[in-house]
Length: 291
Ligand SMILES: Cc1cc2nc3c(=O)[nH]c(=O)nc-3n(C[C@H](O)[C@H](O)[C@H](O)COP(=O)(O)OP(=O)(O)OC[C@H]3O[C@@H](n4cnc5c(N)ncnc54)[C@H](O)[C@@H]3O)c2cc1C
Ligand code: FES
Image 1 (spheres, rainbow, N blue to C red):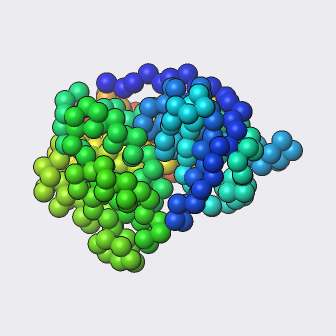
Image 2: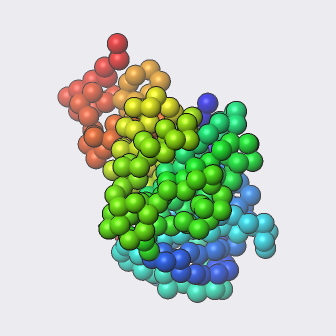
């Protein structure tokens, strides 16, 4: 069953700490309203550029950690990509940030204590640690598969080794773990640990591959997608992607409010970035019921 989204709040939070974690930056912000509503898989939308900026759209980041300190703190981890993340990387303790969150639908948790493989790519792994925590509190077994282009971009390897029953690392350049991609080792891990479910967060290509593997093993897979977002709150339609509903009909859904977590096999990865002809309301098309 899909969880009803929580009501997000807008907070002007003080930066508590900034730190480098290998290739990434991590910011911890005092944001009590967001911390107390947070569930694993939620993200925050952060205003960038300061009060006089021409940068109108917020930048979105998965929440990596929340703590009860100072009434509630939120940590997110990011890589510098363009002007917004460059500006964030220059923030220092005691600066203030304007955050909206928690946003999106979180990862659904299994009712029973089952075995879960958590597959993370690059900074996407950061979203999996609060999930691992929640799963373990329910008695679930957690195994990690974390991958990236190179060793400095594999996020959270040490913590995964502490938390997971097993941790398998992959890098495309072979600088740590197995040379290759998460999807190269995933079938072996699922088979070895007899996993009942897969959760994944990372680049879209990885999510597509992880979904294909889970479907092959006939086990459920939940993916947190990373479609480009502008508002993060359901207003602008920037983040739509084609998703198959319970009725077999494809709809263009907003990944910021209906996602970012979806059942992997419901996302039409091959059609992301397009409006498939058979999507409900597609120009010149029409909905087709499956079967
Ligand atoms: C739900 C969600 C969660 C996210 N969580 C994180 C996170 O935890 N850590 C993190 O580092 N980043 C995360 N991102 C991506 C992050 O939002 C972008 O990196 C950021 O907005 C870039 O802003 P910028 O101004 O620095 O770069 P921009 O100038 O906006 O973009 C620079 C370049 O990156 C490309 N780009 C921007 N956003 C994306 C994207 N979402 N996917 C693919 N290419 C993109 C642009 O096309 C452009 O070429 C997340 C995105 C989504 C949708
Ligand atoms: S980002 Fe604006 S509707 Fe999703």
